[in-house]
Length: 456
Ligand code: SF4
Ligand code: SF4
Image (cartoon, rainbow, N blue to C red; front, side):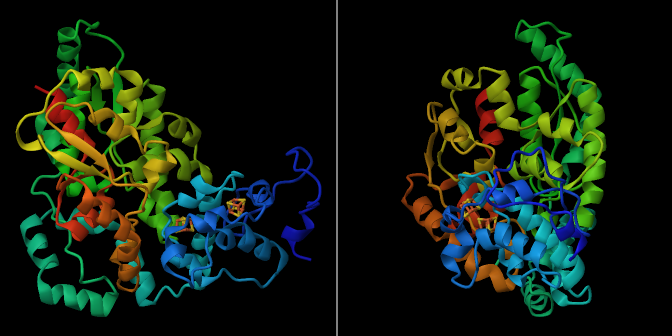
């Protein structure tokens, strides 16, 4: 009998009271967290399977129930059980978490299983491992590319180079690489005067709003990789909108949130980033700041995946005090009332086809943008339905997954075509890539529309 089995005295017919069992490892040697109560809660209803976008388009994918509780039990009961390689076909969209009526922590199980698969079963010399590691560590390549953005933008989208990348590394040549900004968000932030300038702007805004100039309104911005390197206009909009409401913004040291690393089973890389992010944010939270993110996958990582996967000092405080940026204003300000009184003119006076990212759904934010913007004069907004965009970060960039990614997105593309506008809107940068790729629409972030409506 293995150590894991000998420490497991679970009787499946007895209710799990949480009081009389010793926690066991999910998968011995790979993680310290106890998932047994979650696995025990699965009553095999298969609701998760019917909500899985990958299972819907791929008959060979065994689905979340197998990847989670069933594989967990196999691992517990068979000494020589190895993780099924279909775990790499899960896109980490986390829809199964939402679908399960019994609270089984499916994505935590998938992330843990994928981490073990990659660390113990995948060859570190395989093209797949090297490709996935490069994709998962986007921040590393983006840091280099952003030093020479014009050259990088030309080279990455030069036809023969894309062909070579597909043939040698399995990165699809069907997609165009997103452009790197000529000035990163952090460069803009420093040139503008950093936290001192933000503090002064916020104090002036509070005075103008009739609030106490020294009121305690302060947030720490987690911009993530994409807003820094590719779409700094989103980060700038975030800063301007929050300052308009009288918030002092600080931009702490940070690494990638880890979202692409979780999806690729690179948990050691994710942990290194999480240690920096938690340390930065925990110190600021202790000083009274709240953490906010403009990307819903980043807020998801800090809120849910970090405490599920890692044990780092301050992690629970960070999870409890992290918000998605629009959600934060909706909670703390009269955002809806302000938008009802506002009007948009100029470039963003448009009709928007809005897609709610899967990770926004997991945080209960899927209706937020439509409810806020539908009464905003000068614009229109239409929800394009519940379908997954299919790209799931790095997933749709893999040549062998490209067709699957597009098949998942079919419904979303159809609904976007049917919507009256021809501009898309979403909070997730890779959903935006997929929306643009499938429709040719310009895609904007809700913060950009908030800025157009609320900032002078
Ligand atoms: S939805 Fe939950 S309870 Fe139903 S099969 Fe999936 S994991 Fe089990
Ligand atoms: S995370 Fe998404 S792709 Fe993976 S098993 Fe769950 S629903 Fe399917």
